[in-house]
Structure formats: C-alpha cells, structure tokens
Image 1: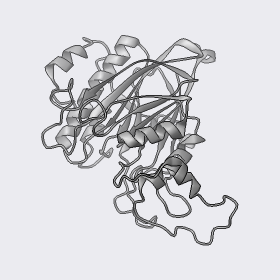
Image 2 (image 1 turned 90 degrees about the horizontal axis):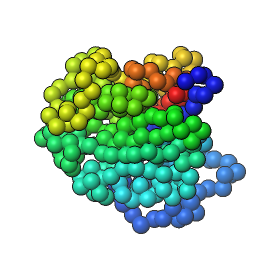
Image 3 (image 1 turned 90 degrees about the vertical axis):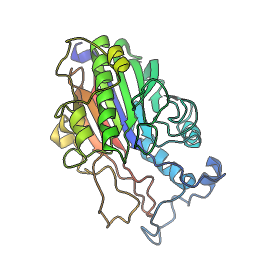
Image 4 (image 1 turned 180 degrees about the vertical axis):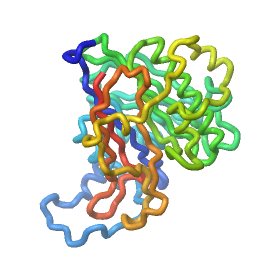
Length: 324
C-alpha cells in the first residue's frame, strides 16, 4: 500500500476501575452537580482516595472525548459501566465484548469501542485465558475469569485496509495465568497476522512490568521468552504452520519517534495522593505485530488526576497513533 493510501488510527487502552460501590445516580444527576466552569477554584487537590463510579465516569469521558480515538479497549467494566459508556460516548460509537463470568452480562467486560464513522466492524469473538479457552472459565489460582476480546475492522475510506485488535486484562494474582494468557494471545495474534496479512494490535492491562519478577507475560508477548503450552484445540485453530515463525508483538512506546512519546511512564498509580508514588508502575500496553503492517507515529500516557484531586481511575489512559 502506498503512503498516500495510509489510514491514520488512534488506539487507546484504559482500565477504568470496576464499580466498587454501585449507586442509583444517573448521568444527568452527575452532570447537575458539576461546578460553574468559570468559577475560581478556592483550593486545589482537596480530595483524595477512590471516588464512586458515578463521580469518576464523567472524568473518564472527559479524558477521552477530545482525543479523537478510533478504537478504545477498556478493562474492569461492569454491565452498568458499559451502559454508562454507551451514554457518554453517544451514537457514533459501537462496541463489542461480553462478561467474563458467563459470556453474557456477568463479570468483567474487556470491551472494544470503535468509531463507526471511521471504521467498519467485520467480525468479533471472545476467548478465555484458561485451560478451556472456548467457554467461560477461570484458570486455577487466578482471582477472576479472564478473557480476550477480538475484533476485526476495515477502514471506511478504504475497504481493503483491514486490521485486528485484541483487548485483555491478565490476572493480578497468578503469574501462571498471565503466562498462559500471553501465550494464547500471541498465538491468536500470529494467526490474525498470517490469515489476513494485515495489521494486528494487542492492548490492555497485563499486570506485568517489562522487567523484574512480574515481567513474564510482557516477555512472552514480546518474544523475549518462549510461550507456555496452550490448549491443544486452541493451538489447532490458531495454527499457521511455518509462516511468520518469529512473530511477536512490539511495544509501541518503543516504536514511535522519541519526541512523540510522552514523558509520563507509569500507567498504574493507585488512588494515592499525587505525592505518594509508591506502587506506581507501567503495566498497561499497546503492541503492534512484528509483521509491521503499521507505522507508529506517537505514544501518550495521560494523567487521570483532576485539579480537585479526583482520580478518574487508578490507572492512566494510554494512546497510540499509528498508520496502516
């Protein structure tokens, strides 16, 4: 494809923190509590700690609405949070994804939202990051059922321009689950790259740093460590023979021009005060397949903190600009 026919995409991943304390407050009611935007602020950073989702959801929408996103992957979304995101993003957005507990509405969603005016959804599916990936299931020793949402798209400006996005949330407790999850995702990403000969992207909360004792999932997905054995039936359905034998996922933060990479590094901050950086780490990523059907143009980690001290989430949103 010549440069003149390249399509620009902005991808985003954001762990929005689950709705820990559900209430009956509606979006219009939350909007009605907002201050006059012209009023002088008497005190900054006056609040701290985790706030209810009914407060945080407007901050989540604010942090994304002006970013011109094409496809966004979320983690830790409940059914209520999915409905709220639908309402906040309005009609130009479509979405795919199911609940991890039952493949319907129960448990955590890892949805993919996409801009309907820019891309067309071709197909979508889900697999679970366990020993039985074709049905809702939990890996032994993991905190929760974990899944991966897969969607294939084409650009509306050029139907031949296609790409695949995989969105996931690996387990916070079990390193074995993270290693298995990364291995399953890598196998599926390679399959997508070979079968469709197009760009493939993986995003999400890996609960894995790029180095150190919790880095095994990152190392597997990026090819630095060998994948572990996966379910035989999944291996068969993802088999591509000897094609792209060295396929891996490339960390887009390291692929963009250095001057186009934000200085914010940590993607997990917790709900601590801004001065308390204990526990900050980078565990949320956007990767591109090593078949290089894309070009990385920029990478940004945006703060979740507002002047009043409210954190939209205990994670920060991550953005990647690519052309395909």
